[in-house]
Image (cartoon, rainbow, N blue to C red; front, top):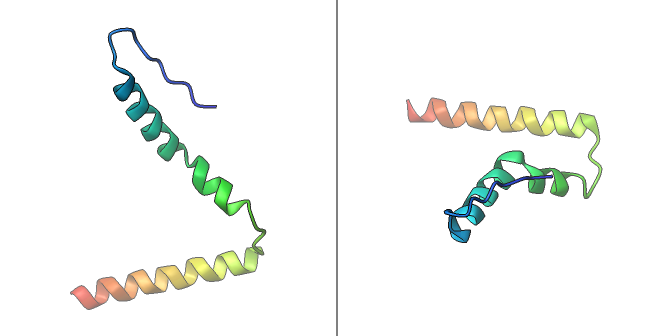
Length: 63
């Protein structure tokens, strides 16, 4: 659960901005989306390897 300290001098917009920043940093939405469907560990590993290969290829092309 996210807790935001909203001081009386602080505007509601600033408190909402702080909440959104904390929400994104906590990764709640990302975790929720990943839990919607089960992915086998072997498929997760394959996806991470493919992503790493892609990133490595992109960095080698820029040089």
